[in-house]
Image 1 (cartoon, rainbow, N blue to C red):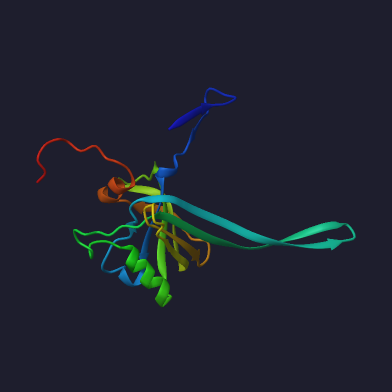
Image 2: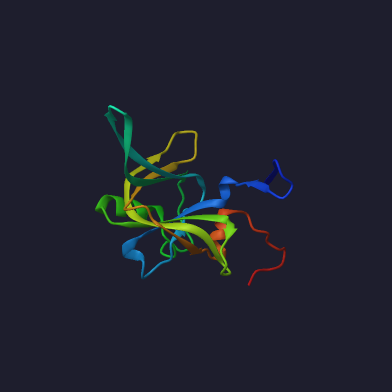
Length: 182
């Protein structure tokens, strides 16, 4: 965490760490069976909001007309498999299947550096939409990687997102004691 004091001692700006902003995903058809999941070994998450503006030239100057906003998410990371319990959480295979079958996918963009008023919840945005691309790369001397692009319906809804201890552990190293685990 980096703190920067500018102009006034009463105001402190804190730069956010990229590892604190995560994207949780879940195919909608699994909503009754599984919680949304963070795909482990993520290397980059992107949330992009854009809108076109049409411009009309008039005799008095240019007038802009705002178009609708669109949201795209992208996620990159290393390929992995959950060998302990492959059905316990959302997997890369589940998302690949949702892409092929054109099934709707839910997404939550969560900022772990911004806790909500309720314990275990963090500020974030919820989206529904579709994966628009799914790509794996397996170079001979590198770890296999995966990248996904996602297009949201609408502009999402802001709120407080539940993030369980397991998800926080995947997102960052969590201290573990030396005692025998139960």
